Structures are given as C-alpha cells and as structure tokens.
Image 1 (cartoon, rainbow, N blue to C red):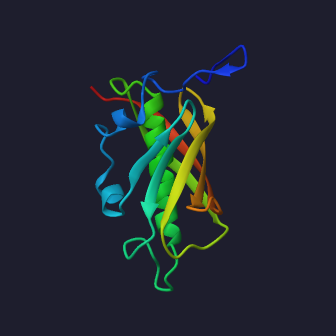
Image 2: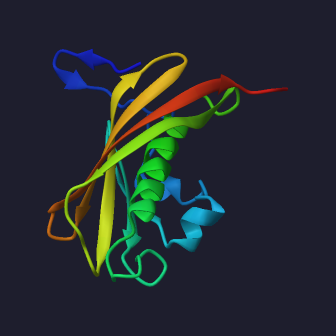
Length: 152
C-alpha cells in the first residue's frame, strides 16, 4: 500500500485528498473524547493526535499516566489505520501494543505521531512516538492492527 514514485512519497490514505479539516467529521471514540484528545495534523504518511496532561490523564504522583499514553498511542495508530482502509469494506482493531515510557511530563499537552512500519492486507504495524510541547520524547510505542472484512 505504501507507494513511492520517483522518490516522491504518495499519500497512504484511502482518501488521497484528506486534510486536517476533513478529520473533524471523523469522530474520535468516547474514551478519546473523555481524555481530551483531538486531531493535531495529518501528512502524506503520518497522523498526529494531541492530548492534555491534566486531572484526566495524570497518575497519583502528578505525572502523565502510562495508561493514558497507551490510550493515545492506540487511538492514533488505530485512527491512522482506519484512514488507510476502505471503510465500506473493512474495519480495523488493535491486536497488540507495547510502550516504553522514557520521560515524564506534568503539564501541557503531549502529541502522538503515528507512522507506518507495515501496511499489509491483513495487518498494519505503526510506530507511535509521543512528544511533549518542547518536542522531548515521552513514550515510544508499537501498535499492530488487524484488518478485518466488514460483516454485511
């Protein structure tokens, strides 16, 4: 699915003209909304979603909760997969996620960037990096997504 023509990358998205403004009509899930996630950017081969570091996403020590980082990583990779597939024929579901929390953060926002490592017929694998507002790396995650035929 990932194509390159004369060293120029083509968009990986099913809708080749997809822009950030167009994502507004694609709702994030209830948990994503509860945690304050919102679309931040989209490029030819990446999707960015941001999330606040606040009372909804902190653990008792006042740091970003690792589970909130995993939720952000899974949301970003899963949404990216949903933008690659034909939504009339397929659905995508998380299969496996891992995360390495490399730095803590206490305030502001964190931004997850999902880029594809593999876009196959049955699975997608995403590299998801989460940075703070100063672009310091907070978390590195890998997400595997299963691509399933839609039941009609």
